[in-house]
Length: 362
Image (tube, rainbow, N blue to C red):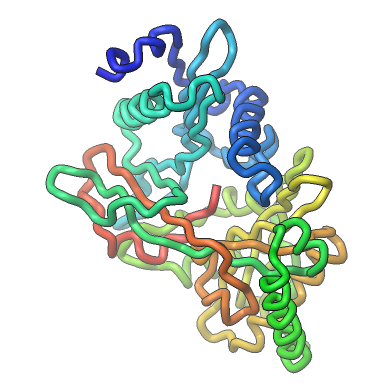
């Protein structure tokens, strides 16, 4: 039906690749060009081959890329990255779907819809239970009769400038917004003056020697009856030590007498004109840790991000943390929506099953 409505689609060949075999360089270039058309020099995720490899994770077995080609040139793509999840003591295959875009020539020609259809068929063919995704618009929440769950929740994007003048230029914020952020920065600096970590607290980078402690904290904080990320040492090490070209990942663990109390990890995201910010994928605190101690831990790693990593700002979504980012000196600047599409034979998800899922922004 779609090809009848758009006969030019017959000129294309649709190919499904495993992530290990996908033409990553061509895909990264296509996505980056599409984002430049839409966002220009506004702050965004800087797609590159290294970033796509980072998103693949250490086990890319059930991830895939759906591509469209015309005369040997890539015209469209949609990516499905492996997402390790756990639900009702099982680890069903799931993906995080992103990167849906086409060349300017194929915009509004039905190719986006064709890629989505082939993506859905591939999920079913591979027996992948769920596809999670982010979107800029709200869509419909919940499910209607006979429909898969499409929209699960919303999450603000939070920002904290580490170097205000650089962050203002990067984010193109107005004078009014800059004044508000200046006030927030001043108030947060005052809080930091009074917030100190006790001397017996130890802050170290996440590595082979303490990754098991970090995983134990994640499991302690996010054991739910619903869907949660499946926290494995191999996955966490990938997300905290990956260094390739322009993408560098880092992670930190706070402990006391061998007991993990807080962790944070993410990656440096390079943007235009040589500027960079730190994308905080996860920020987790033991429930017993006091608010002042949480702020002190965050202040320590933010100082490292500015002085050693040369990042002018930190960004994270509300799904990244089990603490309200606003209480930590972060400012909400935008709202995103996320959801899940079902495929396979598992029981249907409810909105309650998805509460608390720490879905990374990709």
